[in-house]
Length: 69
Image (cartoon, rainbow, N blue to C red; front, side, top):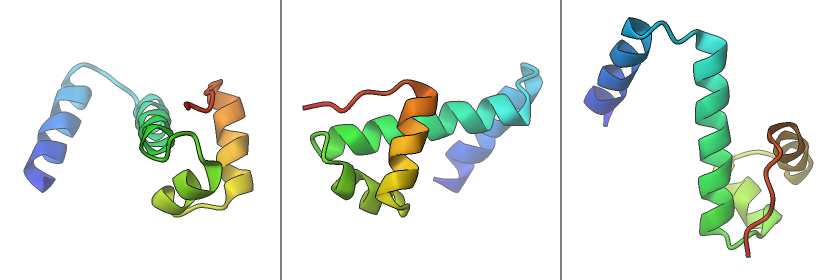
């Protein structure tokens, strides 16, 4: 997995993707996947992500993500 991540980072740097943009894109995908895996259950998604439920709700709002059922 480390090699794949290194390749992804190299590609992003080569394409001129800035750190902040990359971090936000990855965070948004992590949250979206966790919500999907937990069938929209915020408590379970937060546990998967290792963050507090309120933090997850705040991040969902900032990324305009909805709970999936």
